Image (cartoon, rainbow, N blue to C red; front, top):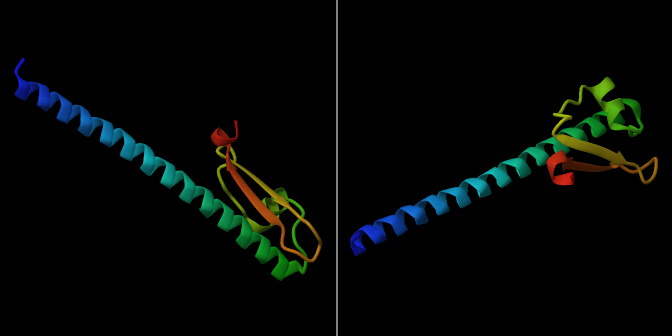
Length: 100
C-alpha cells in the first residue's frame, strides 16, 4: 500500500463519518420539528375549544373526541395541565423513545 492509497482510505473514511454525523443531525432536527407540529396542533385545538365552549379542555382525550385532535399516540406522549380555569393549559409533548 502506498501513501497515496492510505490518504484515499482516510478521505473516504472522513466522508463516511461526515455523512453519518450529518444524517443524525438531520434526523434530530426532523424529530424536533414534528414535536413542534404536534404541540401546535394541541394548542390550536385548545383555543378552538375555548372559542366554542368558553372553557378550556380538561384533557387531551376530550380534544381528541370533540375537536378531532389526531397525532401518533405510539410515538408521542401528550399532556395538558391546567393551572387555573381562566388560563390556557400548558402543553407538553414528549417523544416516547426520548422519555424512556
